[in-house]
Amino acid sequence: MQYVNGPWKFYANYAYLNATYQFTGYLASPNNPYANDGRVLVTPGDTIPGIPTQTLKLGVDYMVTPKWKLGGDVIAVSSQYYVGDDANQAPMLPGYWVANIHTSYQVTDNIQVFGYINNLFNARYATYGTFFDTEYLGLNNPQMQSPGQPFSAYAGLKATF
View: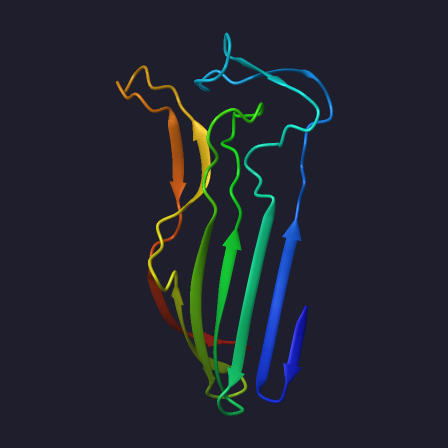
């Protein structure tokens, strides 16, 4: 959804996904500490892991001049179960939110200069979680996470032909 009023553009996107199992049965989960003989019992209504239930993106752009745009957005993602936790027994991977800002200047019809700052507040978050085999590394916690992008800044030149 977006709304434009003069130099302002506001936009919002929301997704709700209730992905659940609809059967009863055992699934392999060899590294899950809650598993029994490397398997977990799934029942109807258990949430499919690795999929956040809710995702929200809110943003705004402002045309400072007809060629210069400033804007920003906030992305929020709800918690999710670790992949391999099909029975939903382990603590969930926490939800997170990040803020980003951007600007661009249209030098000519074919040349644009742009800049982005992602994760403006340098939030520490993970986008994915699963379990791994701790036996060979001598670790105690089998939870593994993929870290989200830290604070980053980009600038560039875009040419179209």
